[in-house]
Image (cartoon, rainbow, N blue to C red; front, side, top):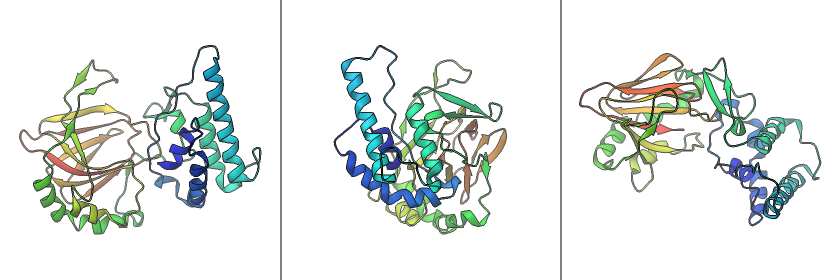
Length: 281
């Protein structure tokens, strides 16, 4: 997420050149990476003011302008230089970041998915459910082979899940008890799980153990983040998601991958058994 972090943090002069140098090391990756494999989470951008410019607003705008000029000077050789053709998609993304407001969203494919405009990286493949049996997902095989070890560790160590009330903004009123909770995966908290994930081609915004409590569901919603796919490895219990109208089962020892910009819900219909997942975005 630190490429996106850089372009979102243009307001801060301190450390700006360090981030520019860091970005240069990643440009080759951005130019060559497959469109479906970009994963990360940008921090929220400063909301643009709709008031008349004040001195502080003008100063922040000057800092923004200086940062973008410095970035182009470092990456392209001059503050007004054109980017190389291999970075056209990255430049389009930067333009989205400069022009979009935090609350702007875009309906896509007839309202089947919802995107945050400022996070919209161009030309990403839009597929609700991905086929994990293809060669592109073979890296999951050695992780799935560790399912029993991961399950045993989660049973011993996953005792505190962070849950919060979800506010349904898609047709129901107020907050509700989704039964969904997560605890971060760290080498200290879950050493076996961390070892199983080592070497996987991930740049995730989140690695966690997730729990969907018995007899609870998450209502249909969109995560609005088009550059991240969500992978679930089911450790224990059975449940399912519904992604763009299609059922996607959680089966112990198996993995699923979906695009959560498409409207989706999650369900555990068992009256007493919780579902435990490795959750990767």
